[in-house]
Amino acid sequence: MPRYHPRPIASSQITPEDSYLNRRDMLRMTAAGGIALSIPSLAQAAIAQQALASKPGGYDPKEEWTPEKDVTSYNNFYEFGTGKDDPAAHSGDFNPLPWTLKVDGLVNKPMNFDQDDLLGFELEERVYRMRCVEAWSMVIPWIGFPLAALLDRVEPLGSARYVAFETVVRPEEMPGQRGVFQPLNWPYVEGLRLDEAHHPLTILATGLYGKTLPNPNGAPVRLVAPWKYGFKGVKSIVKITLTEEQPVTTWNRLAPYEYGFYANVNPAVDHPRWSQATENRIGGGGFFGSNKRETLPFNGYADEVAGLYDGMDLKANFRP
Image (cartoon, rainbow, N blue to C red; front, side):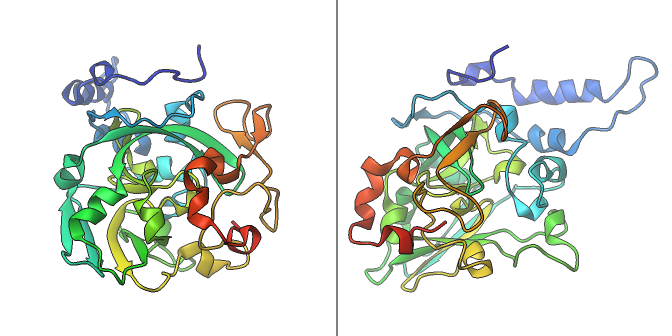
């Protein structure tokens, strides 16, 4: 069987939600005596996904897609735990709907966006490389819209220079946020410079693989800036604030000598504890397998984004 999906999945190929729900109901009963089966959290999280219509976004690295099962089961989302499989295993109790995304700060028109508003933007499929700071990578077919389209709605003031993002805090639904000893301070926060946020590559993703985002990947809306390390892609966003000062970000606050604000992919600048020169593509030979490749400057998007950083010291400002 093929290891990848080399072509997009058409909406017509996706099982209708009602059929899928009926199938899940049938699987809950055994043939022997109608004994209820336990459904794993990943299955619970997947039930809420729906097909999303989108147009081609014009971005595609022409590389084999990472299998959907790997994209949805191998990732970092510390709100559900620190293990790579924790988001899939522990996000079944998270309910992303209804949802409100608040946009405020240095804007003329502060606004709240619900899920219908977010899906009402003109959605595009963008196939992007994703490079984790931990030296693994994927190729993911996102569905979303340019962040600039949302920012245009709220009309940033001339004094706005940065965009701050904040993730939801729901310890009753997110086990990684519970307990005495926490790996991070909540909420998870991130930020971009305003010109980075306006760049055409920067999107708010509402889906992947032709469907709405599953819980493990940041339902219902997350940030994707493909030339930056993956931890910049803040998930399950509830607030966006435009500011004049550079915002605090979670990993930069936790370990400022390891994680910089910009976090642009740069194979010439190592993490203090490992090289960034190469990466392992998930879904191929595995992390220690044969799918090792050289990392590209700006994750392969240098032609589009390098001009944003003219005059900046690539080492001083681009550490992971």
